[in-house]
Length: 372
Ligand SMILES: C[S@@+](CC[C@H](N)C(=O)[O-])C[C@H]1O[C@@H](n2cnc3c(N)ncnc32)[C@H](O)[C@@H]1O
Image 1 (cartoon, protein in one colour):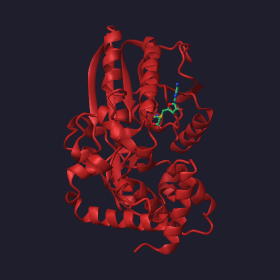
Image 2 (spheres, helix red, strand yellow):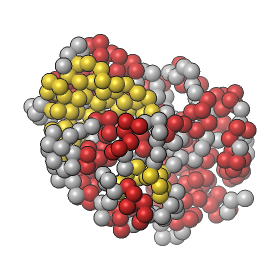
Image 3 (cartoon, helix red, strand yellow):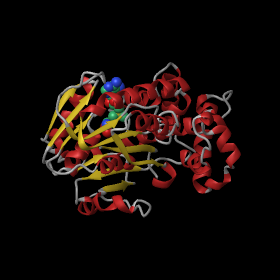
Image 4 (cartoon, protein in one colour):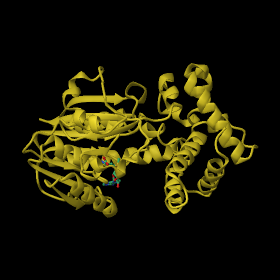
């Protein structure tokens, strides 16, 4: 039985969510406000209860009080953790995801649905070549082993972390020795394969998770442009770069229009495009119930337009990489196929879907083209 203080606090967060705030934001806001009154273990318990509630939403009785539903969700999670096979495939496909998804993913893998009901893994990225020494310093962390992705393994510096320490407060984090970054996101930068001395553009850089990784893979040599439409996110990118001691970059605000932020021709461009985020539904189960089919169709148009605008900025031989943390057909293969058809000046190098149940990480689609 969960602590009643945790359950009551989690019920307060559910109220905020029902009033329209996304669950992750509601948690951030209420846990930050209560930071002085709530112990770290309680904060973890509240987050876990809220996410567990949305993970098991369709198994709960809405007529019960929020407290009773939160407790029922935690019991379902414990049962599932002990015996994941006890939940049958029919129940998973009827209850784990919204009905509209069937039109966008056919078939929906049952293994993925089962993965959605697990609690997500936490991944960190060490600097190149430092995964083993970092694992020795951070207890409860261990290097990823991915036999299914042998070609990418040599440069992978991912560690999974299962401890309870607030990683942001560790001296290793403060010293820029690692970033908290999902494994699938790390595989995007590896798919870019930037070389030291090259010139790259991270066109949807956001807070710079992949910019930092690209710079590390380039050994800090060469130039990286980082653009985004959000000035606030680019400001965070700069803070992050200072901590990680990344210097070979410059930022530019770019709204995604035809006028590019620079006339530079690039060896490579990463378009880590805005997307519906279906691949993150294990980590953020509330989004399963708020994402709408129209988000998918609208974002597919934005993704296509970003790729079309960026295409002329590549040098002959340059690599164009498109990534989205989603699994809908409209935003993955349909966007990639349309780009290939419209741009005979590019040849396809690869297109792959990274599945959460294969990696124990977010779902991701990555397409790579080379300009002829
Ligand atoms: C998936 S996120 C990027 C995450 C980031 N690459 C990272 O690894 O941390 C997509 C980003 O695209 C930006 N964005 C959304 N629409 C855009 C547009 N039309 N043009 C440029 N950037 C856009 C968003 O502000 C957001 O930061």
